[in-house]
Image 1 (cartoon, rainbow, N blue to C red):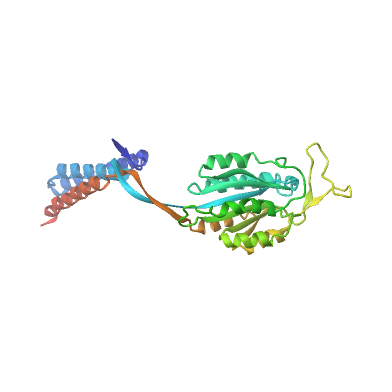
Image 2: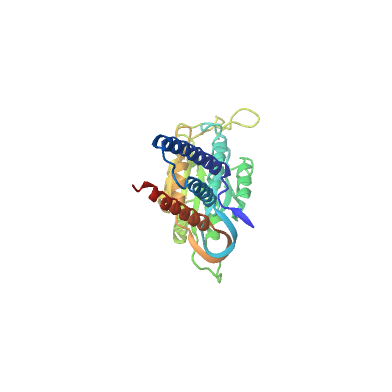
Length: 325
């Protein structure tokens, strides 16, 4: 069955129409010139037919006619990207419009769409951590889980950055006895305002360093900070009964990125570091997993292109005697 690799029929049709207009104008000029010189150009009909056929064949070649299939080896390569997203109450702060979490969700959905050939997973954390979506090639599923994140997913309590790292770490190390060829390149993207009331990060960072995983951190918020609104009105209060002021804490996020060879970027109303983050993730070379054979449509563009070039060569051959004295 004949298919087309590049079905841009409108563009090719417009190009052919333009070619017809040019050929018509050339025909009219040749006619007027012949009358003025009192001569009759030879082979005009043949030359017009050759040019029309060549134009049609060139248009067909541009569309990429495909007939049949052929088996070709494909080397599958990719990386694993874990998204670790802070869903603590402080992510409801509106110093990043509309809120820290909502802005992060929008950017993460765009990020997921940029890696269709890579596995992605989602972990949410606050006082605890939970795998929302295990590693998968199903980007639509990851998008769905990202869009449904909210600050009430986990029990309230002090935020800890160590909990999600401890949760992901065993998933980065191949199981004993597993047929592990080349390990996949792995990146962790931590999206948080940096508030961390958990344990020391040093042990888990050393363990991450041994796996070769890189941690990219996104600091969401501002240094000035703001109050955290409650759902029913009012603001979240601290231990003294005063409205809590939530600020971006860069230090732990910088530490995570620096000690694993990753990168730290900011996300607020003035800066959007997701462009830099995307470039960093794309620069990671995915490990080759395997070589497999797939059936692909066999593009036959060479045949109409070759015939079109022969016709154009014949057109030139018919033109040369006319130019001789």
